[in-house]
Length: 126
Image 1 (cartoon, rainbow, N blue to C red):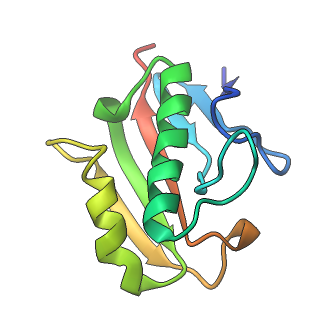
Image 2: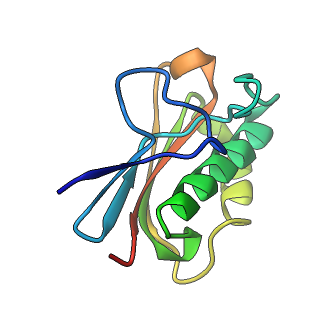
């Protein structure tokens, strides 16, 4: 049975979706923008947004009894592929070897005009 996972330490969903869903020992997070969970305001610049998005993901992972060391796959969405190196630098602060599998794609636009959005699939330990 699927179970919704949520935490007040990450931004509330801005639509009809859950912050994450847990099922069968796996956690599927919704994409996280670089939004401050208290103010709902985007951080300034792509590096700050990437760091905040990853912090938000960390709180969601923690709420599910998981963590960055249990992430199997990430998907990174960028509005400008020229930001790849800057985001990669921040990303490397949160993950260690063996690194999760990852896809990175450029998109035309993100909600709230964000510059980066990141989602994960992780083990929960269920």
